[in-house]
Image (cartoon, rainbow, N blue to C red; front, top):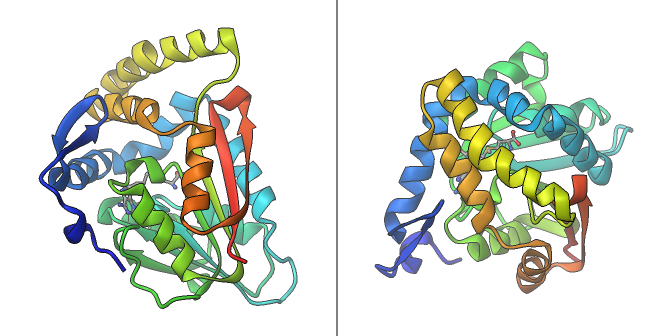
Length: 258
Ligand SMILES: C[S@@+](CC[C@H](N)C(=O)[O-])C[C@H]1O[C@@H](n2cnc3c(N)ncnc32)[C@H](O)[C@@H]1O
């Protein structure tokens, strides 16, 4: 397994639209999420007009966890405040459990509270770790989800290889992420919303615009649908496909470990 440290080259990488030393990037990402954790759910609803809820429903539809008592173990990476974890459990039978992994203790704390409020604590394990170095044995999980998380990871290729390693044979990788808008007028509206509305909303509601600028800029730096599908294939996944949501504002990529 390749660790982040082995990959540090002293080069610069993108953090939103800035270039920063590779080894500094994850710390900056962590500052963003620790500072927004308490307001993350509210801002998510405001910034996406609630659309993220529909996209997450689509993700759970693709996951289709068993409704029976059959054992099913999902790893929800970059699980944050727990939306995907909660939705997956609500859609599944009593044999399903989830490991929610995230690098930010502050985001996990919010997730832990929400899971407890839903009375689902017994079926969820929380792990604070980096998606690039998963602290699990090979072939441990039936499915892996990552929603709006992968673009925050410094070495996406390393995280994808880790996803492949921890999945059982027959396991499924599903990634929900912002993507490239495919509809001509929608792309201009989306630009306006991203660069004019979101940072102002962040400033007005959260009192700061930097984290929200990073969120918008990091979306633009993320590979488009085809390029990301190629990366998923390179990690070893088969039958790789994707589905655009809301004209490509977001996409769900799927791959199987066969
Ligand atoms: C935009 S939030 C998404 C949270 C949740 N999945 C959702 O859809 O609401 C991104 C999450 O990725 C986490 N994250 C960032 N870099 C990470 C890494 N290298 N490994 C694991 N989690 C990471 C952040 O702490 C944050 O909770």
